[in-house]
Amino acid sequence: MDRATEAHQSAVVCALLGVVGTALAVVGFWKFTTTPVRVVQAVGIFVSATALVILRARRPPYSRAVSDAIFLLVLVPTVAMVWMVDDARAALSTRWVPYEPNKLSALALAMISPPGWATGIVGIALFVGTAVVHQLAFADGFRAHAASGEPFGVIAYGAFAVVLLGFRQRSHAMREELARARSEKLALERVARVAITLRDLANSPVQTLELVRQELIVDAPQLHVLEGRMKRALAQLRKLNEVLMRYQDAVPWDAQGHAFEDDLFAPWRSTAGGGRADGAPTTPAPPGPRPPG
Image (cartoon, one colour):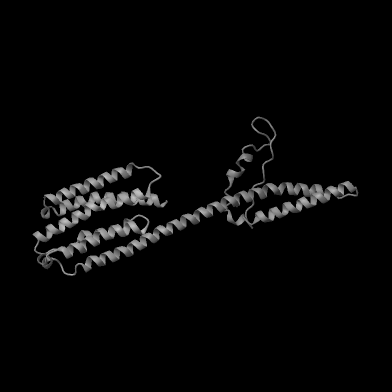
């Protein structure tokens, strides 16, 4: 899976969480909210739902920049909503724990962020930064009713979120390394299959030529010249066989000692019997591959 596809999936998850999270906030904070807050909540659900529909309608290849932009756009109504909800809770509650949605959102963003540090850091900073600014903007009377420890509590959550984001980015890098190693292994296996096939195709002619060469070792001068040339050709074919032997260990073998290369021998095996469908003669089927060892 490439980075553009992973960014698209992260944006889909973010939009889905935007719809579900805002809907839960409507129910959970209903008694604390006013008409402006409910309008922002409605806008948040609309933006997240629209983003979800747009993302689901897109087809590969995806644009990483568009996915990252939608990921951050979905967060904006949520940031405004949690600011206004905390204002309402501070005004109507005698005792309240501030910035709970900000803390939860920062941790969630670290776990669903797309590949690359920038988008995740910006998302976490939106919730943690606005919470710190909100704490400084509160009047002293409101801060007296809030649970102690802020804004250091939300800053600590932001630090934990950055650590989780680091693990998330490391997992992206490891998946890419594994995918690259797997591609290289498959490419090597394909080359090795071709090499073994070439070796097997050369073995039978080498044996035949060797037998003919032995028959040419007579007193006739002309035949001695031909025998010498054939000997040199055989030496070159044996060198080719030695070179191709090196690739044998790179090919997977089944329990019966056969390489998984039926596709390479299919043209010959489909015409086994010495002729094509139209009756024309064909080259005899090559020998089957030999297992290592």
